[in-house]
Length: 110
Image (cartoon, rainbow, N blue to C red; front, side, top):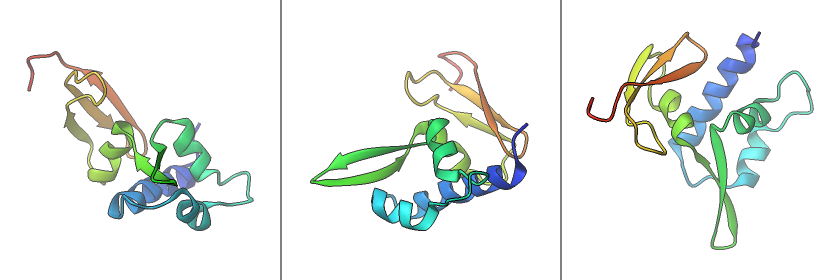
C-alpha cells in the first residue's frame, strides 16, 4: 500500500518541476533530496517513470515524462482524456486521488 504522504509529495514534485521546466538535476536534488528512507520522493517518481533527465549543452535537466505531465497539469482531477504519450493511443486516465491509471480507448476516439 502506498504512503499518502509520499504520494502527495510526488504530486508536489511534479507540479514544482512543471512550473520551470529548465530546472537542472542539481537544482532538483538540492530541493528534493532527503536522507530519510521513508520519504524517497525523487526516487519513487523516477522509478515510476514520471520524471527523466536530459543532457543538453553540458547540463543535465529534469523533465516530466508523458506519465508525469498528466497529474502535474491536472491537480485534483479524477478523469483526464489523454493522447496516450508515447505511441499516441488515446486513453482515459483515472485517478483515485493519489495514483493515475491509463486505459486505452481506441485510435479514433479523439
